[in-house]
Image (cartoon, rainbow over all chains, first blue to last red; front, side, top):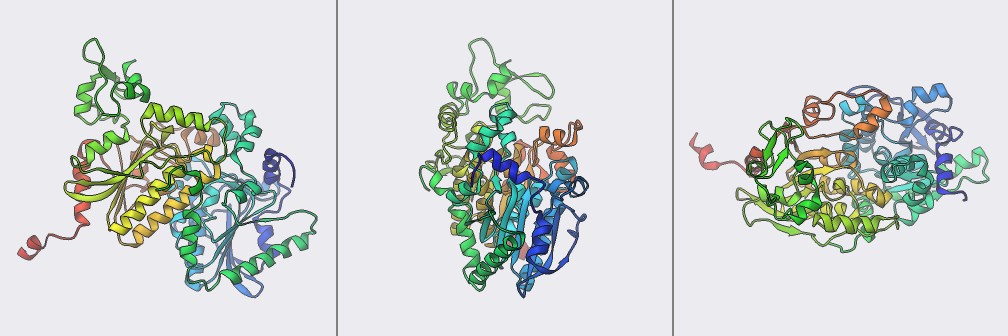
Length: 264
Length: 291
């Protein structure tokens, strides 16, 4: 693992990286895509459905960025609208009803920031996911595979296990945004990336994620096989845990407690 | 430019901002220009009217000023007042910034929490303060608010929360992002316990606070004209390359789009909150039996 944190940001954003659909198609079999939030529309930036992991039926949700310029535009560059988060939540509640684990692949620069997103309640959509995911009664595993852009990523990452690919990043704000707010200079992005502690190793050190998935020296098949094996192993560990929801609560409850000077 | 000074925390601290007393100037009655109607209003008159101009414009209000306005006299008892942020990422300049803000605002963090009574009814109350790093949410804010919801579950109390925030505190990086999940989980436990949570969104409520506990209440009120949104207006303009209408993301806009229950002007807020709390405190059996 090498390069500056800002190099990692650039790597995480690269259109050469596998996208959400690549993960779904290579890790699972029999994927059936399910569309729509049943409230407003179907967000192409969020792909979801049911599939088999090994033999086990699971619910899969992924943010999809697309590869080509045309695909990327059609997927809104992986920036979900509220209906994307509501579709994700609908599928997760469905998973809960049928006792299926949920697996999320997260890759977004952030939730979409246009007028329509505001009109349709972007903040409310993300908030509802955070609220409902906190007590979802089935195992949830989220893997950050590229960019983990703030609340727009967290809305799919309130999980029992959160993993990051080696070159994924996870941040409260983009380094450019941080630099322009703090130092009124977006060219300071590299320095901001350093300060924000947004690499996978940083996130692990801060206790925000459980694991880092290596990307190095693996063929395509081995890469996806590795993730499939990791998922299967962990789901076996998580399934049937009567304390699952309580442990998820504690997982988030005590993150950052060490950052406080005097505990309550 | 008296009104600008009036809004500055430093000035307020020096001139009694912590006690909520009006800023006294040597010559004559100090006035403050309303950014909405552009009229100058004597500050004493503004204070008498809960910092609301006669045109209806709501000036920003400090956390402790709000608590004085809302809580029955002597009923407020602060909780977690000693919880403060460290510098977990060694973010450059953060400690100095905290020092400066603490001195200027007289607060240790961007939220004040406690128990209080409103017209005799007990509740947990949190009030965010825009004078502390624009109400930004870091680990200490998250810890205080999550702890308050847990306290409210144990005591079976409703929670009333006043939000004002520019969003997550970027100097705490990912740890501040995680506070959104942490508080949301605590709100959910409180909600699942059958308890009431009322949020009052004040100007401005944005970013990670909008995308978590501001939008998770059973009843969501907002002050007139308050900016309520997820993305900042500048970001939306940059994304869409369009200039936005003046009413975009105002409380009235958010009401029209179905994301808040009502707009509550400051002068009637205490009475409204008391009525809402009362409706969740069981029925009046005498009156019911008399029908």
